[in-house]
Image (tube, rainbow, N blue to C red; front, side, top):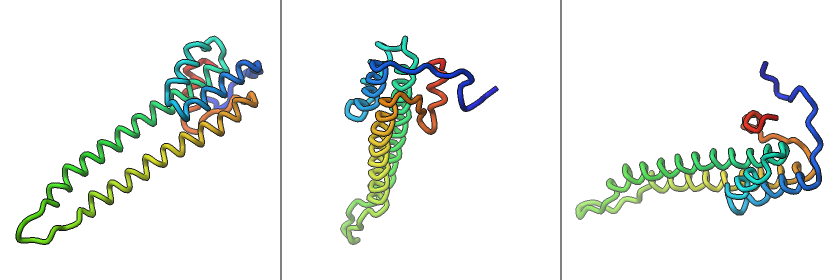
Length: 149
């Protein structure tokens, strides 16, 4: 039985829980995975705080994997395009269009991930401060299962 919403009503969080959940989202914008990890480890007895901190942790794992893939693609593109751009005495020095096209695309992907991190942090910071059990679009259900909500 795989339902999107929990079968039992979720408990209303206290003011302290709202603040800690809000801080896990807000601080992840500036300090990465460390604030959600610390808040999760300190407050894992609170399901509300643990759920919000776990979402931040999962997001940063996904972001790390995406960053790693972007850098692998960048280095592969460097390996395959730069040797062809070496100057030869008998030919004009060609501009490595493929390399810089890949570089610009990958730079835009990294900027997009940073913007997604900023937006997720702000939006879910506000929702956590309101006391909402709001789940991230792609992996909120995974965080719910990990925390046991």
